[in-house]
Length: 461
Image (cartoon, rainbow, N blue to C red; front, side, top):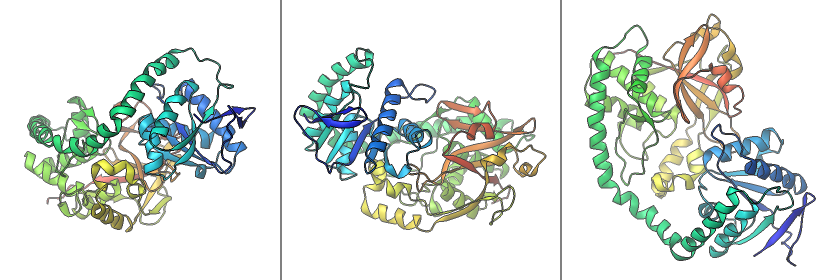
């Protein structure tokens, strides 16, 4: 195996091997975060070593691989704490394990020769996977910087190496190949069954929520609280071989919970208390012109709102041009999906025509004003009071390299308490009313720079 050692903050030969001088790409493998989304000691070391390598080798490009949570925290730490320019990083949020991280370097980034930075007890497995895939990977020996080796990670990795090598050599590629192509088709019967069960639960939940509506609070707030009281679970829609409208009132993410609240409120206000009406409102928001297809799905939240505005369901609060407190302006072309096509290969973007249609729609761009996060600290009696309880707050995303082309980071629902702007939301491990106000929640999150505001319109349709 090919190794170089990191010693005294620079690389040196090891075992008589000298790395090529033109090797300027480095794959940094991620690992799990702590429950509070902070770096574990292992990740802290990797981040520090990346900062060392970045200073020593200013022409290197670093590929941060892992799930979205750990890649984002690693990236943020390197940019904010170590002040490394964000253009030095490429974020692979689809590198869920060693095999996929290394394969993505070849399939999606065109890198066949690169360094691998990971813990010493993990590097052997990573290099063997790379070798089996026909890649020229060089391991960086960081033993001079590691203080403890004989820990539970070390022994776990020894056992995992045996399992991983067997799976790579014998079956992993074939299993992965079949999974990408056959499992979505095999799941069609299950998805139909799941859809029928979801509709039965939706009907019961909708009937219960519509029974005694509290009109003293905004309808969107009421239905959000009712969904939380029903014990909703958080999660994302499964891969589907064929696009279908799937409304679930008891399994939501930060986007679908807002769509559900809006659709339920529209049903109640307009006297449409049936499941078919709920699905109709949802379809008209969730798809362009109400046409159910992956290519016409509103993949960005601003697209959802554009459809909802054109249908007369909601209105955007805030002027077309910056004016206090809507002093921020977004004028961009959302492009995250097509720029990160590999993340959506299993969901529909593998098809070239679908990719072309979505890419063409992205080029139309979006434009809206927003309230910068610094102004969310103002009291309710100030100009910020234009925001009302039950308004949907779309958290505007800072355009750093990981989120480039992604216009909205998260969704909140406004709730004033003691003159401070709080919010309901469904987030990572959280749901319901936040214990902190919006300003406190967002002030240390560099990806969140403000909120755009949308409000339900009570118009008969």
